[in-house]
Amino acid sequence: MTPFVKRNLLIPVSVILFAGVLYCLTYVVPVLENRIQHLELLIISLLIVLTLIVMLFWVLLGVFGGLTCLLLSMIFIYGPLTDLNPYYYGVLILAFFLNCFLGYHMHGSINKTSRDHTVATEKVQEDTNLIRNHFENRMAEISAMEEKVDSLLKLKNISDELSLSLSFDEVIKIVTQKTYDKFKGDIRVLLYVSRGKSGEIFLTDSVCADNRKPTEMKKGGIFERWAMKNMQSLFVRDTRKDYRFLLGEEEKKEDSISIMIKPLISEGRIMGLLRVDSRFEDAFGQHDLRILDIVGDLTAVAMDNARLYRKTEELALKDSLTGLYVHRYFMERMDEEVKRALRSGNSFAMLMFDIDDFKKFNDKYGHIAGDIVLKNVSRLLISKASAGDIVCRYGGEEFAFIVLNCDKNKAVRLAKELRLEIQNSSVSIRRQKKSITISAGVAMFPEDAKLREELIWEADRRLYKAKTEGKNKVCSG
Image 1: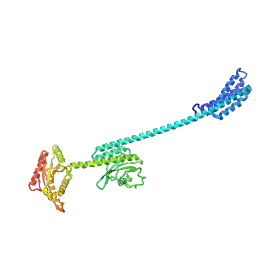
Image 2 (image 1 turned 90 degrees about the vertical axis):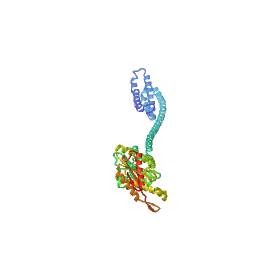
Image 3 (image 1 turned 45 degrees about the vertical axis):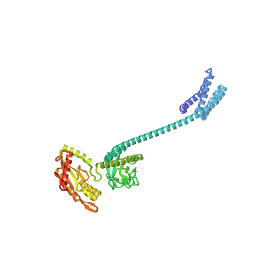
Image 4 (image 1 turned 30 degrees about the horizontal axis):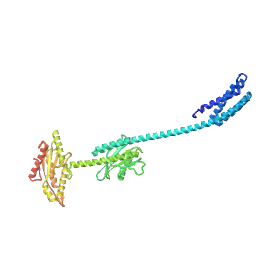
């Protein structure tokens, strides 16, 4: 197709017209010669049409088509025209040459226009393809940007939740669940935590898809050991093809093919490992690893904050020297236990202890020796405490012990056991073994007192009585 004509349709039409005009000039006109008066008009009309058809062939088919049409015309109509009037043939030849000239130039012009049109069409198509590719690239970039924005929003949510959590266990739960929500699909999230001075890791929490089985490697495997040794993230596209690792029997039992592991590092120390794995190869990309690195860094900071908060809380609630609860916390817990005992009808005991002649011991051997004694007594008191019992450093060398859910006989027996253990224990002072003794007072709630202050006063009174009666004894009445 050209910009002006439809060649496939116009060429057969031109051929039919050409054949029809030749037939008329060759056979029909001679027959009508004696029957029509103004035959010249018909002949001239047919010749005009014929010259136009010849020009059309030049336009449509170029030189070859035009010359062929011209020669056929001259051959077929030579005889009939010369018989009628030789003048017609001469005029026809001049008209043919004029039409051929015009047709040739029109053909060239049309071809040039056609080429320009083709070039313009190709340019438009090329521009269209470029625009389409640009649009597709922009849409892909927008999609990737939306994914990144979604990832960043999820990371922000994780960061916000972790920043609000000061509980170590809560941090672990948030991290495993949020990491699973971030990656989703056929994955498994494992969080290992390092405990003890040995640095050994233990599986603390995990979240996995319904069709995934829990891991049996509670202390990690070859991949976890690699991440801990190198203290850097590990990315394995296919565990079956990675030349760095020789899988053992435990690893072969696992249904993990793709693995990402991020060490949780704080102040140069590994606090744990965050692992995400899948049953399919190439399940993760570099972008996923970067996301896991960010989550791991947030987790390490949150775990460190929780650890520091726990230490700070302990420092606020416990005496730094002995590790026992401080007086303020002891009084708060006393209020709670009094209210609980009144509601439930249960009883509990309060034991007050005082180290005998501690001031003289301090003056003779020094405060460092006194601190050693205080630590030793505190250690023995803690060793006798059951779950829920409260032991505090009440004063300088005075201690208070709340024993829950017990009767008076049990409380007195416990106080006597403690007195004997402390008496029989010894501490090394200046390379010499020294022993100390304690006195104790025992009071029961609600038998001996109905209020917190009354209970403390009664236990303190009985302690003073034990002191005045010779020390190193327990007084319960």
